[in-house]
Length: 267
Image 1: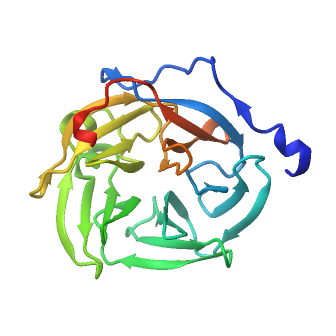
Image 2: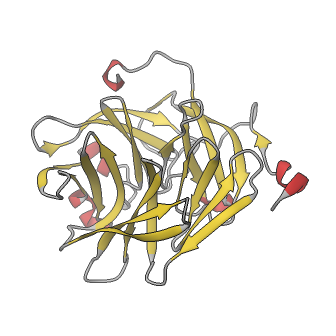
Image 3: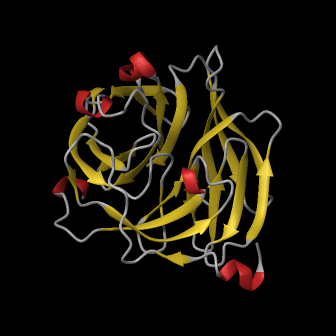
């Protein structure tokens, strides 16, 4: 969609109510949607830079103008099966990828270069402990979440890797969070200060979790209301909010924090 028609795709959401989340936890004020862009490929995740939005489907990354929604580029690869979350890092988009639900499990990270419009393999995990759903680079290390589902979803694990991909720690998820997953797992995450905001597979909730210094179990801090019905989320560099998707309507959502007293552990 291009030109003036594209301008009509940017819809402001101020004043509209959001369907209540289905989480069984008590939700504190979190984030509210401010506008959206319809993008057919917005089924797995979204990420953004200053000028563009990246909508992720199972097998395709589509770059659109963040103001008009006009498509700028798209990329895929013949061996893609299940792209998950996306994160911008040093000008490139990194996507978690797995062969879910096939066995044996395979997981890797794919790298998209907007300048060359190429989507290539960045790193492949040997014998992963689950399906990679999100990966976050921070201070020279990678934090990677490997999901398990159904009765095994309590085995979902967050692993810290050094730059050479040597594992230096792993953490499971708190019981109250796992029990709220509805048989699913952690679909996306961002760092918010010293804590993680972790998204559900399909509930409108974000879990704030602390990472203890020693490997073990992540610590649950609070559950926040979210406009995103699960899936991959990312930090929006414009305004400091979040970007994610509404999978049922194929929309990229932009969200800002609801004014409240900030949790001191997020700083």
